[in-house]
Length: 117
Length: 115
Image 1: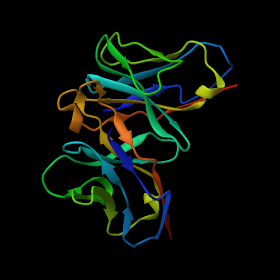
Image 2 (image 1 turned 180 degrees about the horizontal axis):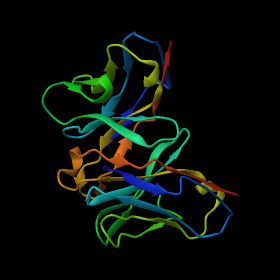
Image 3 (image 1 turned 45 degrees about the horizontal axis):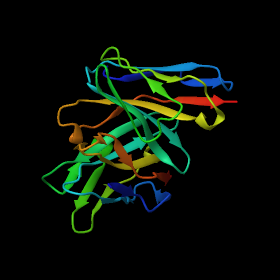
């Protein structure tokens, strides 16, 4: 079964410093990986995805993610954090189609990012 | 603006009183799905629909029903709500083509409390 793990419940970083939110995955075959952000009282917003190609994927709001096949990781990064980046971040893998799979997103537990001024 | 719209945003009800949470998308997406979000459990899929008149169970379908009579709408029905259905609910949609690498677009959520 496919799964995603986010080992940190919370990440604290000072504004202006680089940030990393960690994600590891377990899939059979090629992974289709996503990052989403959830602001308070809002739905999940798509940030970026990895399908194939370059290991460094660029997304919305200055975020990027680095795919590492040997370490089965897909860490979210930003060179300079903003206070407004404070939110709940989810890593996810899309379930495979066919053989009874549902096309659902399989989410990690989420990591709260706190950026302090 | 491309969006997924859920209503209501907040709902407080009593055990056993039937309710419907509506979901509508304006992106002509074939695939739609419902999730519930609970602390410590993350997001779990309730039901999904690959296209009109095609629906199927997700991971936690008990106590829920859905219908997909037209492409844009995918209501979630709780025939007899119970307190364990108190949760934050999200509707989502995506293209069906190349489903595996299509991002899901989420609504803003419905916070349901069943007393």
